[in-house]
Image (cartoon, rainbow, N blue to C red; front, side, top):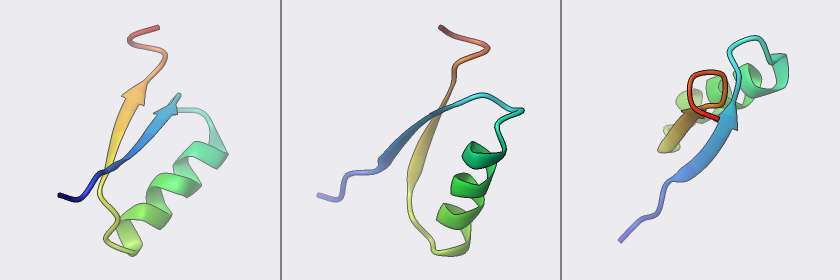
Length: 39
């Protein structure tokens, strides 16, 4: 069973957006937890 990466981010964070873009480009499964919507 393959685990996914968990990323805790906010929409305005450039580092977070870069990491998510990297995951998508390299087909790395991840779960995004938006900290602005759910602290």
